[in-house]
Image (cartoon, rainbow, N blue to C red; front, side, top):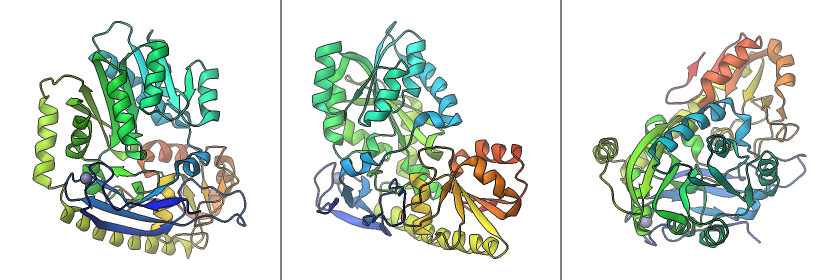
Length: 409
Ligand SMILES: [Zn+2]
């Protein structure tokens, strides 16, 4: 049985008018970190398409979620940036709520890092996350978490048991799920009449502007603009009235919405006008993006090869995004000796499709003296990682592939 299906209509509006934007080749799902190289990995087309009717850019292939999630190893709490951002996120959301001690539900709450801050502020919290091991970790750490996919059925269960929610938030998950309609319906049903919904997503304007082609991987099904996100929410009677910006993923938007229309903030009005001006919802803009990414990836390979001629090359960060970057730029174990990752669940495994061994930071440190450069695959944590590498004695060049032009630090 194939683990994926190709779509022939838009997942959001059902239109058949979908056109290919970009082909990143056949790649194994990005989180398939093998323990041995003899384990066979499936290969799935990685292509972007654009819907002429609702403008939503999306992947052409849907990988079976049970395959994707059984291999899921990302834990929010491992990143310092995520910890710092969670405090800011919490205070920002609570400031906007007019309920004293709100009941807060998080969709795809992972290890509970974000809800912990709400709990500390006296809120009643509930997380929902499909990864059983991670949901248990969160519950053990004091953040009650249902081990389930969030959808309209789960929303009903929560409502029956705990009542309606004052705040429902979903960070970096709405672009990742094919059951997006059931999720948005669930949010609409679960929210109190005066409740507030919050969605954070990697913003397609920034993906286009800064060439984030590494954000195209099989879990990342949708590349939303404000226009396409507003269209989706409106289908379920939800009205977006404001936005803020977030540093997560190298550039995200946080949108705030309600069940009843509110006055649109100047920030939202301005962002919508900018989208219009930049034509980010048009096919041609995405075709231009695809050309620029292809040139960038070729340049990246040449840069790495120049350093490889002088000695070993280490990578930093074995994320889903780095998997796409390595596969698309044709960088494998012939060009990169190993990839450092601090997540113990990834260490001792291999990058999918490119077969580079993943090692711990401590093991990486032992190789600092004898390597010609480090390729910063986790470039969206640039400041944090470079400071860490320098503090730990790495003095050589660091290749920062994105945003935009390749830089050597
Ligand atoms: Zn559509």
